[in-house]
Amino acid sequence: MSRVVYVYHIVDPDGSLWETPQGKLTWDRVAAAKNAWGCHTWLDAGPNQYNPKLRTTRQAKWSVDAVGWKIVGTPIYRIGSLEEGDVPIEYT
Image (tube, rainbow, N blue to C red):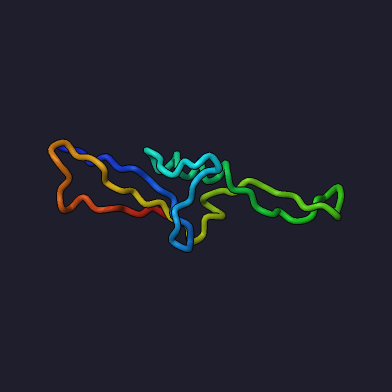
């Protein structure tokens, strides 16, 4: 049985590829891509409870905050060669 190997990219709601601050934009697993996005994405969480003049941030969670974002798996290898049915796949 042959197996297709995919490389995964994160696509923002505008259709652009997302990359980490260090420039990484491919991952070997969907979970690794989601984890990287969450580690590098910070959101405004509202006023700071100790000082209302300041704002608080929080790390994003893919399951909650990635509305419109998707992960695309691109087939890169199959033993023998890629076949016509080996098409990109999307995860949300």
